[in-house]
Structures are given as structure tokens and as C-alpha cells.
Image 1 (cartoon, rainbow, N blue to C red):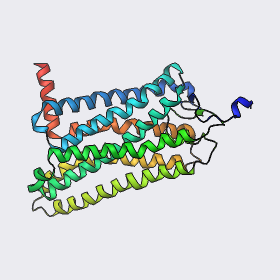
Image 2 (spheres, rainbow, N blue to C red; image 1 turned 30 degrees about the vertical axis):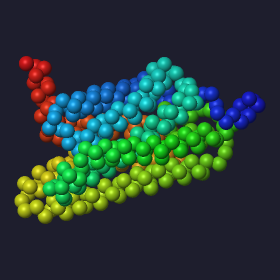
Image 3 (cartoon, helix red, strand yellow; image 1 turned 90 degrees about the horizontal axis):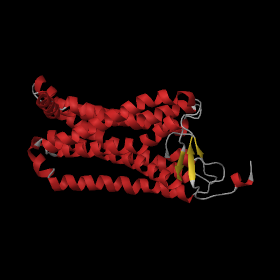
Length: 315
């Protein structure tokens, strides 16, 4: 290796994203499902936002949180897919160092914000079912706005540490990232310094932040289920549980692959690299495609409004 490649450079001008090592010949074919997921995510989430804006009956706390979720579901895929497609279609692998850090911030910040939104939705469902008479007085528009602001600030401040730590590391081995996008640990592993702080902080965010969100969501649903099972009739139980079903499906679609992908990246040394990249990239897109479908199909008010829109277009 030449001296120019081994000399420390604390801020490399560019990184090289390899894409999916070993599957370069199939890049164009792999791009097709990713592109389809992205198009569905964009159309679905814009449709959700349009329906929320035009339907006054949906101007309630649960749907305000759903609007926040739709915005997040637009930001995260948009932060990674254009570059992914440029790799797949044009073999454009270079990414500016600052652009890489910006992409990293939006990827991880959006994930933490989305987790916070799911927690806020769980709190809304808890109040609506367990203390329904006080729902409108507890979750006022001002409270919802403050909760939304707190979610965004929490995500931004926690994730800001990632690019700061990455920027502070010296890089003397290589600037080649074996990934489709600037994932935190994929970039940190290129540093020629001790990366334990970055690794431990990443685990802290996963387990102590996302883990706490999962804990409080579970706690909310334990209380919700207690109230549901105490209802006198089966129809009442099913109707009440139906108001939570879309939220529960979206939670599973988000948290299960998130935890699996994070653990596989840190402890799955024997997992084939191309398999890990495919799983991680799918996880970054799939929940954001599924959320508008889940809420659109399983939320009666949204589904009815959507049918009205299509009926108006036909007539």
C-alpha cells in the first residue's frame, strides 16, 4: 500500500460506497424492488398527508401523530434511495464526506423520531381507551405540539453525536464503505482509532432509547388490554381493539427488523456481507412503505375518505 493510502486524514474528502459486494452484476435487478417500495412509500405517505389536510374529522391527536409519521416516512427513504439508485444504475459510488455525515444523521435521526412517534401514539391510545372522558382535555393541540417538538429534539440531539464522533476520528486505512449508504457503524469501522465509544453509544441509543420506547409502549398496551378484556361484550372488545390494530401492526413492522438488523451488524460476524446489506437496506425502506398501507386500509375514516376521492375522480 502506498504512503498516500496509509497517511492519516481526519476528514477524507469522499467516501466510496461499494453497493452490495459480490452482487454487482445483479444491481439493476435489485434496484427494481427498492424503487417500487420507494414509489409506494412516496405516494402512500403523500396521500395520507393530503387526506389529513382535507378531512376536518381527522384533525385529532392520533391523526396529528400520524401526519408526523408520514413526514418521517418520507424523509428517511428520500435520504438514502436516490444515492442507492445512482449506485445501482450509474455506478456512481462516490459520496462527499459532509454529505455522508448528513445522510447518516437523517437516517438515524428519522429512526429515533419514528420510535418516539409510535410511543406518542401508544400514549394517545392509552388515554383514549383507559381515560376516555379526559382525552380531549389531556391531549390538547398545545400538548400534541409540545410532544411532537420533544420527539424531534430528542432524536436530533441524540443522533447528532454520531456524526460528531465520526468526524473526530482519524481515517488511515481506507475510505471504502462496504454498504449502500452511510450507516453509522459501517463508517465508524473505517477509523484507525478506538471505536468503542461510538459502538457503545450506538448500543445505548438502540437499547436505552428505543428499548425504553418499546417498554413504555408495551406498558401502555398492557393497561389497554386490561380495559378491553373487562368490557362486557365481545363486539365491544373487538371494536375497541380494532382502534389499536393498525398501530400494533406498524410497531411490529418497525421494531422487529430494526432490532434484528442492529444486532446482526454488531454480532453477526459470520453473516454474509451481501445478505446483511440487503436486509439492512430493506429494513430502511419496507416499514415506510407499509405504514401508509396499514393505516390507509385499517383506519375506517382514512379508507372511507380515500374511496370518496376515487369515486369523485370516476364521476
